[in-house]
Amino acid sequence: MKIAEVCSTFPPYKGGMGNVAYHNAWSLVTLGHEVTVFTNRRKEKNNYTDEYPFAVKRLSPWFKYGNSGVLPQLFWQLWNYDVIHLHYPFFGGSEVIYFLEKIKDLKIVVTYHMDVVGQGAVVSKIFDWHTEHVMPHILDSADKVIVTSWDYARSSAIKERIVAHPDKFTAIPCGVNHLIFKPRFRDKSIVEKYELLDKNVILFVGGLDKAHYFKGINILIQAIKQLSSRDDFIVLVVGDGDLRPSYESLVDTLGLGNKIRFVGNVSDNVLPKIYSVADMFVLPSIDKSEAFGMVALEAMASAVPVIAADLPGVRSVIDKMKTGLLVKPGDVDNLAKMISFLLKNPRLAKTMGKAGREKVINNYTWEKIGYMLDNVIRSVGKK
Image (cartoon, rainbow, N blue to C red; front, side):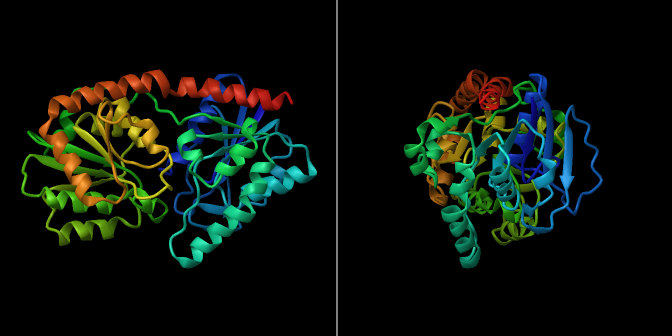
């Protein structure tokens, strides 16, 4: 079938939703479909080399805010596709698809990644209005709606729609490339570069831009302040963005420059090497904008124990005291306590890491996810 993957972001931009769209496209091509990805063109990086087994159309938005962009071009670009797979939220893209469906019998699958949560009174009101008055129509236009976990969906803005139309919804989790993210010996080049010899490594991976304000890196920094008397660990922060200077300033203010090292963005080849030196991974997100936590899967696939916020969706990935630990979102004291606990119990940490790897193999490989998505796409396409 001819399938359109529509997403607000796409690699090389670092973000979970675009990463899912990327792997979905790969899987569908592997399973015999013709796939085209439609996404926003980002102003700061226009010189892309898209060497994929599928086409990528980066459209210039007529208006842009954050990762959203108004793309009326989708109205004619999507005219001749058998199935449109929309990754929601996508302000400025999803609405165009909704109006197109009104005049043409489209087959639409929506993956509902997360609720939209705005920062500031004005943005919050706009997002709330969209959730109440626009989002329901977009989901109603879909033939099938995919959620990444029932745990998140049943505590989200769409919970009442699931009760009203249970047959319309299905759960397909995000995945991870277990052949790339896997247990490895500590990479010597990473150890030497960041001076990690004889140090426990606490790892954070995530966007440091405004779009990823919810990642909670400031919570991690404050938790590390409580542990600053210890000299047996280093924190590596992988990621970049416009909020990075404020986080670095907080580190300097708290006198943690010798404890926390900002790595910046790294290539896909380097990231697995960084996981290889980690003794634990921390995902301290603060609200439900964190709906799953794909980086937690990367850590688990690498046999690294995870400390994650006890948030809907995120907690569905972590088996408490088996593959990792859960902490109350935004609770600095609790996070410091859990980090200290794993530092004091290295054997348990290793056992958790092995259990995490096993859980990934059984549940979260992209191959398994691809077959699940293919079944949904084909069932919708046959209607």
